Image (cartoon, rainbow, N blue to C red; front, side, top):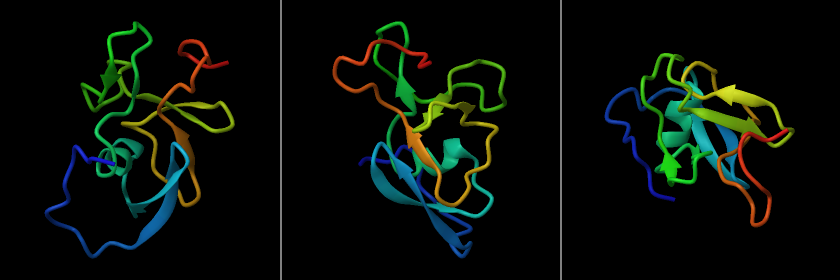
Length: 103
């Protein structure tokens, strides 16, 4: 996976596992989902308009560009949701699944 964000400070925070599209990755205490995801992958989700991958925009919960889903189908704003141990996040549609939003 190619990360969009790179940690240059605060590397001493405790980490915990989160799953992103079936791959177990590490998040740090205090991370929001957008930080946890973009330190591991290059984009947050598929666009519901078919114009490619999206990576968030406003970083404050106003633009609706950072929606991700839990494997259970719950929709979350990555910019304002704290990452928690054991989270399992889906950022991509599976082949033949349809379009966002799920459920």
